[in-house]
Length: 201
Ligand code: GDP
Image (cartoon, rainbow, N blue to C red):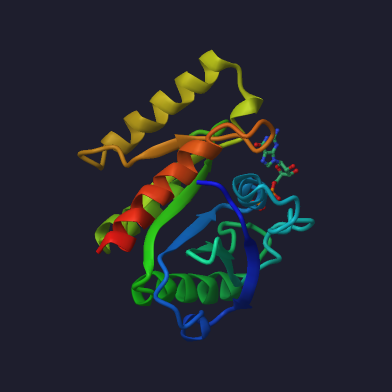
């Protein structure tokens, strides 16, 4: 898929104020600093569509972007930032769960995971919650350029082993780097293949 247009539509903290549109949408979520903004910019080929976070945990909003007038890319807040207070964390959880439970246009969520790190409980718990609520998701491993090929392979295998402790099947996953565009085509093709089904229906 070629990105012809990518425009910011709206930011908000209330799922009921998300765009009134039936376009398919794809959500990006992960721990603060995982590389989400960089990935969104890399995927869309725009240098600063999503803000590369100056201060992690600062953007606590649901951000909608319209891509090719065809689908919405949704940038969700980064979770698990230690320095936000417990009450902010609770509010955050509430509106994220509300988003996933209520937003019927949400076709697939991409859960971002830094390929350098061991599986983190917060990510695993989040995926567990998604599974229990029947919300489709894929995993995107970020920052692949930061590891040598062997180490990358080892970490991905370790992650898969960890997932197999609770899942019978490994969710679809992508390996990406915003530094060298690795995975760009694969993720966009994946989105495009789903969008094409929508258009045909
Ligand atoms: P966010 O908080 O998840 O939106 O993360 P950002 O996109 O702001 O990235 C956090 C930091 O990681 C920034 O310093 C980025 O430059 C860096 N970063 C993000 N993605 C990559 C990547 O693929 N490769 C490398 N080497 N650095 C990255």
